[in-house]
Length: 310
Figure 1 (cartoon, rainbow, N blue to C red):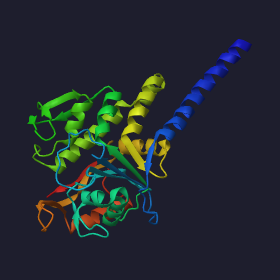
Figure 2 (cartoon, rainbow, N blue to C red; figure 1 turned 30 degrees about the vertical axis):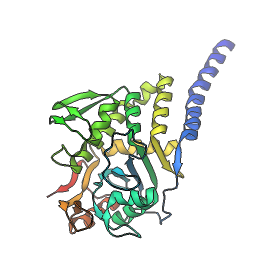
Figure 3 (cartoon, rainbow, N blue to C red; figure 1 turned 60 degrees about the vertical axis):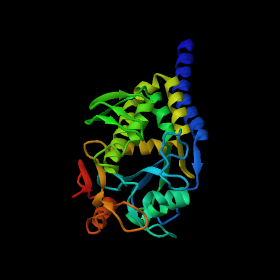
C-alpha cells in the first residue's frame, strides 16, 4: 500500500511539476521589447504579430528600406462576443504614420520599431494592441523543423530568384528552409502581397496543426525542442508571458477554424502611387472604416474570408 502511494505521489509530482517547470523555464527564455503604447484599452483582446527580417539569415533581398523591415503584419482580434478574426495588413498598405508623412505601413517599423508600428496600427484600426509578438523570419526554419516539417499547398509552379523557392504545383511536405522560402515569396505570386499573406497564414496554421498537446505530453524532449525554437524566434512585448502566447495560439486556431474570420481589409488598389513612396496598397476609403468597426464589435460574419480587392 505504501509503495502504491509513493508511486502515485511520484506520478503526481511528474505530471504537475514538469509543466510548471517548463512554463517557468520558457518564461525565462522569452526575449522582450518595449512595444505597447499604453493607449486606453478597447474591448476584447488584440494581438499584433509581425515577421521581421532583423535576424535574417541573408536570404532577404535588400529593398532599400533603412532599418528593420516587417514583411508580415497580422492583426489577431478576439472580441468579447463574436468570431475571432485574423487580418493580414499588407506591408505596402498606405497609412498615416504618427510623427512622419504618410507611407507604407512597414516603414513605421523601419522608422521606429515595434512602438511606432503598434501606434500606427492602433490609429488605423481603432483597436488597442494588448500583446505584440515579433517572429524573426530566419527562426521560422527552426520552428518548422522542430515540429517535423509541415504540409503546404500552392497551385502554381514557382522558380523565384528572390526567395529561392522552387515549387511544383500541389501540396508538399516542406522542411524549415522550404517553408521559410514559401512564406517569403512575393514577386512570383500573381496576387503579390495578398497571395503572400495567404501563404503565411497557411504556414502558421500548419505549424499549429502539428503541435498536438496530447502527443507533446508524452514526449518531453519534443516540448523542450519546440520551446527552444519558438523562444529563439520570438520577441514579445514587455508584459507578455508564455501563457499569453498560449492564448495567442488558441486564438489563431479559432480564427482559422470553421467559425473564425480570415482575410484582409477591403482594398481599392494594389498599385496606388501617391507620390514619393512608389507603389503602395490603398485600402478602400469607403469600406475600410466600416470593416474595422465590424472587427472591433465582433460583427464580421463567422466562417468568412474577408477583404481583398474588388
